Image (spheres, rainbow, N blue to C red):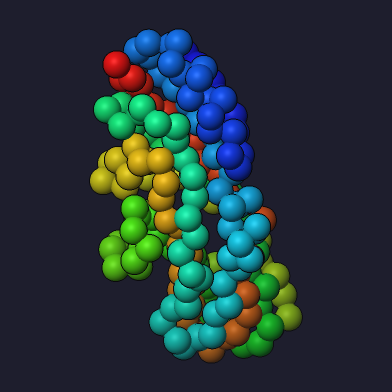
Length: 177
């Protein structure tokens, strides 16, 4: 088993390492937060009772060339979001959308953060962890995907959902040849 950790664009080195592996499992730990933060898309303002607010989809580089025939066994999402509420009371959650095209919001969310109660002038942290559904996992065989976030708010509240961490752990059964 090959365990590879990378953020950003260390894809070329990973590709060279994988070519010598043959069939087995490859594990990629991707810091998606760094892509979103660098693009200024790590937070989503929300205003309830508006049903939702979104960020522009962000392109994320994932896998090296040659893994398209692999099987994605699992994709685990972990992270933390802080709901910084300015005014009002309500609940706020966060949905993550992933697709191979920029129109990420046309589909269903790949992962959702359970809504938390928010009160005026307070920040409510919400750590999250879970696995993506099988349908969403297969998107990770692509070299690049688009990621977008949507805040979902109820009640009468306004504030900002700010990510402080978002990691994907992608486990592949690699079939390079």
